[in-house]
Amino acid sequence: MTTTTPVSGPHTHAPGGVTTQMGWVILALLPATAFGVYLFGWPALNLLLITVLAAIAFEVISLRIAKRPVTPFLMDGSALLTGLLLALTLPPWAPWWIAVLGAGFAIVVGKHVFGGLGQNLFNPAMLARVALLVSFPLEMTTWVTPQPMFAEGSPGFIEGLAITFGLAAIPDAMTGATVLGETQTGFSRDLGLSETLPGVYDPMQQALGFIPASMGEGSALLLLAGGLVLMARRIISWEIPVAMLGTLAVLATVFMLIDPERFAGPGLHLISGGVMLAAFFIATDPVTSPSTMRGRLIFGAGCGLLIYVIRTWGGYPEGIAFAIILMNGLAPLIDHYLRPRTYGRTRGGKPLEPKASAPAAPITEKRP
Image 1 (cartoon, rainbow, N blue to C red):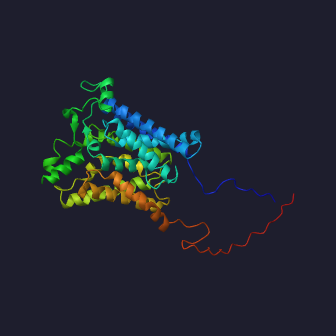
Image 2: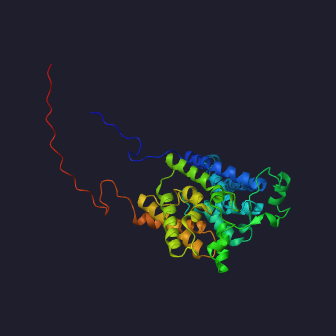
Image 3: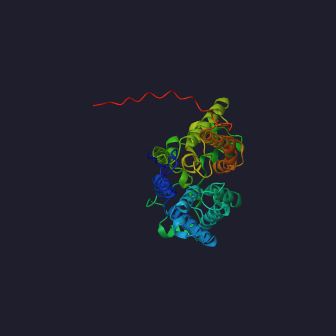
């Protein structure tokens, strides 16, 4: 009798290694990234390049300090993706040192302090964004209206460098508040949505990205398209995006029906801020999210709940980074209580009783 030993786990299905998955995520982000750079011009491109290069530099330094081989870890694409995600969450005309500090915090504290890729508890880009927002609230909340590259009035290459490196101030005429920031300011002045939103909120402009925002909020439609590509390629699963967006939409709908002057509807919440970026590209990080289907559903729902609570009653108009960091901290607990059933055992851990098999049919030999 000949037996065959399986060369790998028979129940393991993976779309590829780390490098392949990182590459697909970066590719899915490229359309929205390119559009964001176009919308906000040379200063945004400068900030993007500085953030990515700083993330790679800190990765090399951390690997050398840890005495690990640089090339294989650097080529997995994780540092590049972390820098890209962080850049997409920053104000597009933020000063260069914000990018460097954020990249350093993300790579060193958010990743290598925990032991490197695969061992970090929190999403590095979101951890860095929270640290920057708490430490430098003015620089992290200075938004500019879109200034498309090469358009009249948009800063040129030299002027863009001057803005990025602090040699030129951002003109007041170019600054503006986000829709979420405007609504929060209106509430503090006892103004209802009917008085606040006209003039600052156009659903089509918001969905296309022609609004004061970060590059990662630039186009909800392009981010949605990129996320669907990742789902089709099975790079990410559907549970977290669907649970997160669905919970946010349901809560927004319920409270809007209770008081439409105080609570914005689901449309505004889904296309405002970095919801699409977070739902498909950040919250789905396999390292910092639960490993089971039920766990991912709870994780996504928790993210949606916290985003709505912080946006509506919190001190910050956008709560995505805080929500994801909080749920990252709960992911190990979710995995502990929602462990999948071990093959051959009950959910309680007891061995399954073997079932009586039907008697084998008699073998009859055919003679010629």
